[in-house]
Length: 171
Image (tube, rainbow, N blue to C red; front, side, top):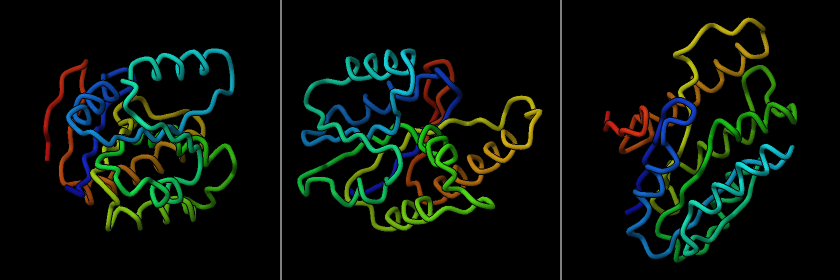
């Protein structure tokens, strides 16, 4: 079924593990990875995530254009795990694609969610529950992530909150 599941939680809360568990029963699976190996530590993270996935996933690495990545999925794709929205926002911000809290890549991604190509499992971080960031750029990023998470929640058929590896369905 073409639906959207949003998995949200803090860093290292078990979001990715939950996403993989939800996708496990499907035969034709795609993993859309947004992370880029910008340093040795991130490369190790990416490698660890690759090992955690079973080899039946087709992996698509796309750090910027999620709209294009989703439109290009093989037609037999039953489920796509997109991990992670927050990293993708960081990529867009780093590339200075977000201007005054607007961005064509975000608009395109939100547009495709009106008619998803398959069951989409979106992984994102809840970053608004901590301390108020000290600098303007970090506050703007937090605001952008919070706004996008709200828009994703509106479109999602199901929302799962992940806390310390425990999932709680909130929608």
